[in-house]
Length: 327
Image 1: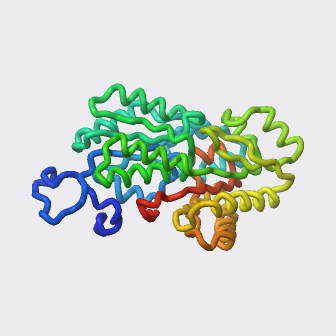
Image 2: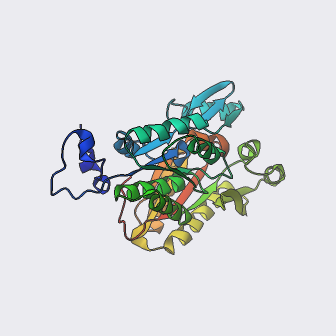
Image 3: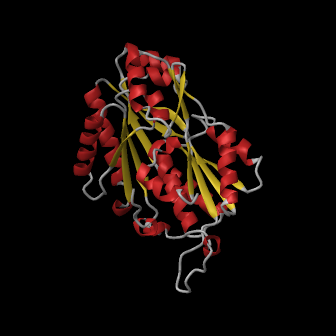
């Protein structure tokens, strides 16, 4: 087994040595992690990254349920990407729901039992899901202090906020500083995306029926964004090729206006990995001063609403004081 502390140098902090039955060396400079971080699977965090943190409870990812027909699947518990893709292609209803308050309560109590002093729970936008509300209900039932952060965003924009919170906790931060780090990171991050069809977003209530009908009748390919926690139309384009090209231009303009070494990009897709790979490669050529974009499939809970063929780009910015973060 690889040494987790060696693999994740920025999270070398850990629980007090006395909990492991031994004294820490006098030269040990690592901070004590006092605050656990909880999030939901809409954060789209890389599995290898979360695996390096979940073993001792520093990070817990609550799976979000997805309903395909009459079957309920748990994000992260079941391999459901292919099931959702087939359902969307065939017209089978696909719906999502928030996790139960009981799932959050269990996570918070587990953190308390492990010796953490507080929990910061960072979640998908409250405008798009009731997840943060479920977390607040659970927080009122436990003895450990819990701060719930509505990130007002989704995907790796939420994921970057979670990573900022984990970093702050690793530095020994209390709940207030960890929550502030997550919220500040979320505020620095933008989500831009293109969907071939607005139908899934309409079915899920994420956009109004009038907007969906207009897009269908006029064959408009919209570029959308997450703003104020909501999905909003950004521009209307007449063809898929022009929409993707315009998406690249918007991202390049945003990223190009930020401090180059600190910019982080992520590309999400669903059912179109080659298209996402090409988009990431073109962004790398357009933004040679920025690190390459991380490309990954959308979490099932987001893919269920965006539909097949979605392309999303997250533009984030690493705080100068914390340095880079491996993902």
